[in-house]
Length: 189
Image (cartoon, rainbow, N blue to C red; front, top):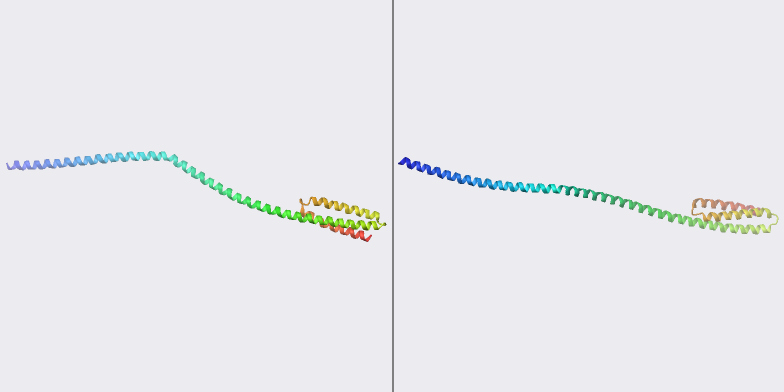
């Protein structure tokens, strides 16, 4: 009887152990199922994220293309700004040169005008000398013609002075010297 009691007790313990093991197994299964659900959810999220990334790839490429275009446009704008500054400086230089040429042209025109007035005086003086001297009429007529021609030449050159002011100034000086020589020669007659 005592053996039977021990056996029964031992059997109860075994049943309790089996029951405990079953409960733990059930709990482990439940935890495993929960983990599987969580894993499925994570897989779905991963697939969704992966799809989103794939969908974003063309947009990312397009964004990079826009950024490159914006950089190119910025470089072009900077180049145009530098060119604009260079053109403005050159335009300012040309305006200054134009003003300088205008001043030179004005001075040379004034010199020509003075030279013509001087030639007129010389011509008047020469004419008075020629009319008072009957011995040198032929010679003085030649000098008179020569001075008139030189005066006309000066007048023509005065109208062309804006084309070559430096040459004209030099030529005017030569003509003034030549007229002075002519006047001395006339006075010696």
